[in-house]
Each structure stands twice: as C-alpha cells, then as structure tokens.
Amino acid sequence: MDLRVVAEDVTATDVDALIVNLFEGGLDPGGATGAIDNALGGGIKGLIEAGELKGKLGELVLIHTLGRIPARRVLVAGLGKQEHFNLDKTRRITGDACRFLRSRGVKTIATITHGAGTGGIAPEASAQAVSEGAVMGLYIFRRHKTRNNDLTDIEEVRIVERDPARVPSLEAGCARGRAMAEAVNFARDMINEPSNFMTPSHMAAVAAVMASEYDLECRVLEPKEMKDLGMGALLGVAQGSHQEPRFIIMTHRGDEGSDKMIGLAGKGITFDSGGISIKPSEGMGEMKGDMAGGATVMAVMRALAVLKAEVNVTALIPATENLPGGGALKPGDVLRAMNDKTVEVVNTDAEGRLILADALSYARKEGMSPVIDVATLTGSIRVALGSVATGMFANDQPLAAAALKAADEAGECVWQMPMFDEYKEQIKSDVADMKNTGGRYGGAITAALFLAEFIEDTPWMHFDIAGTAESDKEKGYVVKGATGVTVRALVNLLLSMNRK
Ligand code: BES
Ligand code: MN
Ligand code: ZN
Image (tube, rainbow, N blue to C red):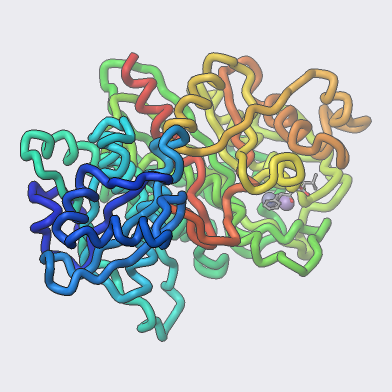
C-alpha cells in the first residue's frame, strides 16, 4: 500500500474516497470539513440538520459527491466530544474509516490529519497516528486462504495538506507511524501463523531473514549450546517435543560509543498444549499464539532498526513447543536453570516462566540492563485485567513510570501490578529452590515473582500480555486475532531512552 503526504487542497484531491471529520455537536463544520461542505453546496450541513450526522465517536457517514469534487465519495468520521478528544481517537477512527471504505470496494483514500485543527493535536503527531491507524486497521491475515477475492486491497492512502510548508513535518510523522505500524503487523503475522508453520526453527529463520534485511546482528543457539550454557529450564520444557528448541539472539547497535546494552526477552512457546498437565481441548488452538511475546520483541527490533534508534538493544527469544509425550517433562520433576537455581515443576503448563528463567539468567550474565520481558504468561492476568489492560510488573519504579508514559503515548492500556514479597511464600518448594506455580490466587503476581528470582537486582520489567495479545473483535486499529500489543509502547520507551 502506498502511503504518503500530498500537498493539495481537499477539494481538489482525486481519489475514490476522502475522509473528513466532525466533532460531536458541531453544527457548522470548519476547516477541511467546512471546505468540503461548501464544495458540496452545504451537503454536510444538511445531513447535520437532518439529524443523520451527529459527530459521535465511531460514526461513519458516506456521501457520494456526484462529480461536484474530484473525490468520488466523502466519508465523515465522528470524533466524539471535543473535550474528550485525544491522539488515540485519531488512530481509531482512521482504522475504522479505512476498513469501512475497503469493504465498499474503495481503492484510493485521502484523509486529513484528524485533530490537527481545532482538536489541538500537533500536525506531525496526527500524521503519525493517521498512518498507524491506516496501516494497523487495514491489516488482514489471509495467507492460508486460497479463495480470497471478496476483499480488494487499498492501493493508496494519502494524507492531504494544503500548506506545503507543513508537508515535511507531516512526512516525518507519516514515516514514523508507518515504521511503528508495520512492526506491529510483522508481529501479528508471526502470532497468527499456525504452529505447524511457526515452529521454533521457523521462528529462528524469520529472525535471521529479518536481521539481514534490517541490518541487525542475529545468532541462534541450538540444543547443544543451550546444554553447554546450562539452560536446563528451557531444555526441560522442550524435551517433550519433536521440534528442536531455539534460542534467538538479535542485537541492534544504535549507540556505538556506549557499552550499555538494554535487554528484551520474549516468551516463544510456538504451541502450548500444557504438556503432561494438559489443557482442556476447547480453545487449545489459541495456544498457537503463545509466542506473542517473542514476536513482539522481534517486531520492536525491526522498528528500532528502521527508526535508527540511538540505543543498544538485544532481544532474547527462547523458542520451543510445550507438548506431552514419552520424553516430556513431568509434574514433580526438578530442573536447574542457567543461574544454577533449581525449580520443582508442579505443573508443566507453567512453562513460560521456565523458559524465561533461562533467558533472564542469560541477560543478567551478559550484563544487560535494564531488562524487559514480554509474555503471554498467565490466565490469571486475564481474570484480573480482562482483555483491555496489559499487566506490568517491575522491580524499578523509574523504569515502570517511563513505561506507563510510553504506553500512554501509544494509546495502549498498561496497568502496574504489585510485587509484594509476601506473595513469595506461595512459590516455596520443599524439594528445590522454588516451585513453578503458586496456586490459583494471585497467579500473575506469583509468576512475576518467579521471574524476578532470575533477574535478581538488575532493573527489570515484565509485561503479561495473556489477556491482550489477541482480540475477538474488530475495533479501530485492532482487528481480530493477534493485536501486536506492547510493540509500539516498547518502541516509544526505547526511543525515549536514547534522548538521554
Ligand atoms: N500460555 C499460558 C497462559 C495463557 C492463558 C495465555 C490464556 C493466553 C491465554 C501459560 O503457559 C499457562 O498455561 N499458564 C497457566 C499457569 C498455571 C498452570 C499456574 C495458567 O495461567 O493457567
Ligand atoms: Mn502453559
Ligand atoms: Zn504458555
């Protein structure tokens, strides 16, 4: 899809559809919407007076222009109440509007920078949000559909701006938005891919191809090297599968002068059956997405490379299946992680924390700091926060605060969860240093406390995306299936670190 900024007047743009907007309760549209209203002989005002157009958030009213302007259609998108307007609404309405137009066979779209006028949003930020909304909202996963002629692709989205002096900053916003959104879609593609395609070795191959395309360093460890490093927890989870595990290491060096290295770690369970502690069959297919954390950190690396972020970042992705079988890990087994701590495996379905234990130990041994992990770790976080907010845990409050700010800028809901020492009682083991589950209550917290044992005093933060990694409905720039949540929040966070 061609996405660009064009210096032209909305009344002159020649496209299948032009998106303008209206605040709720607005009776006399101004700016670009007003200019279109004039060109249409008061057509928009007429709809407002007739009560067919109210400007409510999410409202989409399509008008055929019948030759009065070069744009064949005008779509008026409701922005909601002006006092509640924010940048994320620009993303959301753009996503909704683009999908609406695609479903009507539109191929070329022009849009204004929603909110940059009376909405009070910086034009560059609006152009970024429009680009993100369009690229994320139009995402569709149809790699395995052999008959897919029901949807035509959007060929072009152009952001129109009358004032040529403003074009360079809009172009900068547009490029940044595109990099962000394409990284999100890269993660979505990996997460949506069924586990018979997205095996651990395929994940490693995707990483290698992406690394060479974007000039990242990439190294992939195989079982023998994992054994030499003492990654007993990762190997323990992997032993039940016929697919070999992989430990993917990707590095972006954007700050050559510094020896500081930030660590990312992502859970890469390409299928989680639960292992011997097998899951119920209903909904088990969803567990093809249990490598969402791994895909997320890979996507972040891609965006950092595209945006030439001036930070050094290494992503670690322990990748394996979790399956039952003759060689599988069993409840009661004891594993030794890379940092020599031992774990009693009470439940083989609590496998994410096991593989992350080795990734975090590795990060700490390599001296990375801070370290941030992302994982579809617990059903418990879903019970606590539903599908709206991602749970975040941290042992470093400035890092947590910076992350909340970065998430807010991205329009992502992140909520910090507690890590009181008192919960540690629940993961005490009689036979090993700790056990891998702490019972039903506070499950997301005990999981985070388990991870904390492997990062020790290194500044660290953990995102539990089990509730937010997938969506069962379309809304704004979110489509059904993988969401790519936390990709943009983390890119924002890492970009903010390079301003220092
Ligand atoms: N991958 C699951 C968590 C999950 C659940 C992700 C729902 C996405 C949607 C994880 O490995 C798991 O099975 N966790 C168990 C832990 C329990 C056995 C302590 C859980 O949350 O039930
Ligand atoms: Mn599990
Ligand atoms: Zn899992």
